Length: 192
Image (cartoon, rainbow, N blue to C red; front, side, top):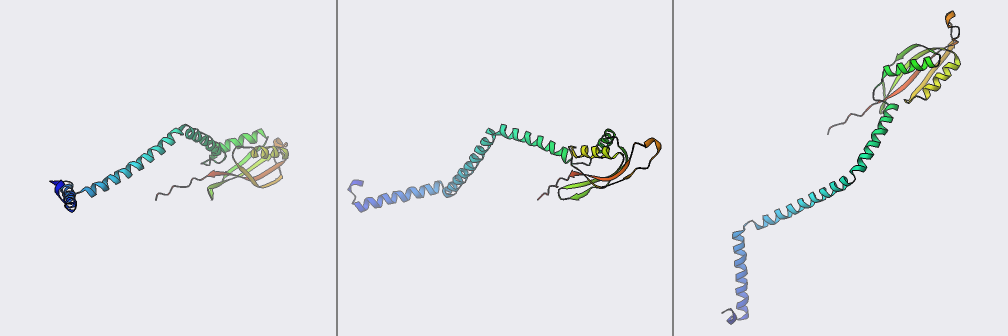
């Protein structure tokens, strides 16, 4: 019967069938457009997650390298912490200065820590000191201070003739100075 229809009729029947199939699909699947949008969104999400997973795998492949780098940085931080500690450590510094003075034949007469003074990312920690000894012993002491693992600046150095008791005749000078060491000040993290 379809064969007997003229060409225009055949086209009309095909068009009617196509419209009928589309209408049936619309009634069976009324939200097909929404489904297509969900499919596209899921494909985009899958692509993003796949990219993230590949990045994670690339990082995991270099994990050993990163761990080694972190260990190296931690060692470097420990070295730097000895040079620029996070706390004033007054007791340790006093013991070290006292021992150094004894080794240099100097008598430590006064050790007066000042207050911490903020400067950019660190704080200055001045310590007023007075020692008694010989001129060359003071030079040895200052040389040893310059070789200490921490940074210590000595300034405001003044010397005068020592006038002491008969027991202390080998002492020739009294020296007063300020030894300034430094303390690292961590920046506080600001929460957004």
